[in-house]
Image 1 (cartoon, one colour):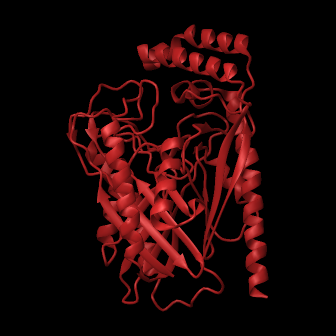
Image 2: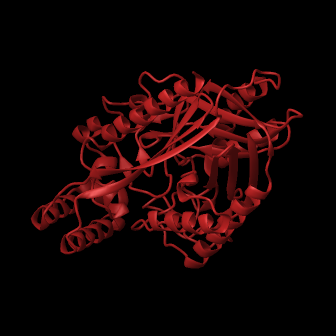
Image 3: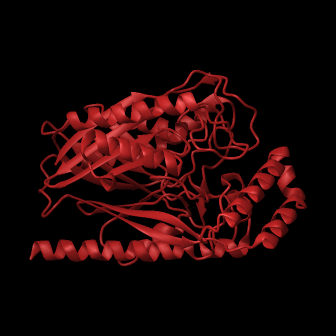
Length: 428
């Protein structure tokens, strides 16, 4: 397999709004640690993948589509082979419009786009042969913040590494399901994924470019929110240390993998949204405004979010938009490891449901190629709370219907089964 990497700084000067928290004093005041856009290019025979990964909250659907289109044009690479993701740090500038959660600065977005295209080009030009190694460890930091009967966490730390012929690492990937919400102040930071990436880069020979993703972390937080920078760094280091040990133990002399190491597929999935008429929209908005818990939690921003959402839903009704949203489900197979990519904030139960009866580890990479908002499990709809009742107000999107996560998990199982059948056929 040929591998190329690039890493460019996207840290802004203080003064831009930060994205992710509705009740936050804006703007940013100083830089705690740098933000990066990282690019990973993989080439294995006819299979190719270009992965652009940024220290940002999320990348909106239109921006993600524009980036994929432009990078595709720059590099003559089909758009489905281009993956654009975010670490979901809540301490980076806004490039996605969330009501009351930080104003988008157009100049920063333009510079970000330019850096993404530059990183992609550099990664493709930086190819060299590498061998893929994999490791898995355990970490018990993540907690289900909802604390309902459906509580579920994902304690696995998945890791991949690409080793040069001399044993040094050119690139690495880490996946751990935990929201990057350690910090709540006005500091610019990549949060725990940034600390984990730095720790792993320093621990592995070759100082690789490291992509850290927060998995299906829709309902999973770190042990506390709003902690000190030192505590945040320590938690990131804990995630990385287990990955480092496993990757270092994956020796250079291991047997080569049979068959293709890399496979990339992507499929659109139409998921149903709530089909509310004007009266139902008005009724829901009124109920939210009458709920004192929302105002206690988010202050005046809550009223703004409700009113903005109500106007947006009326616009959808006037345009006669169908009650559907477009999910993009992808599968990246790397030897025995499978990465499911999805444009939403997935609850961790998605990974468990999708990987039933699958050989080899399966990890979820959310915040990929756009954003549909939260995609909760069916049980969460009966339990309520923020992710189900209020989150779509801030995203200014219709609420997905109950069962969408399970629908996507079923489609993911189908993709995984087809992959297994293809690999079996290839070995005969």
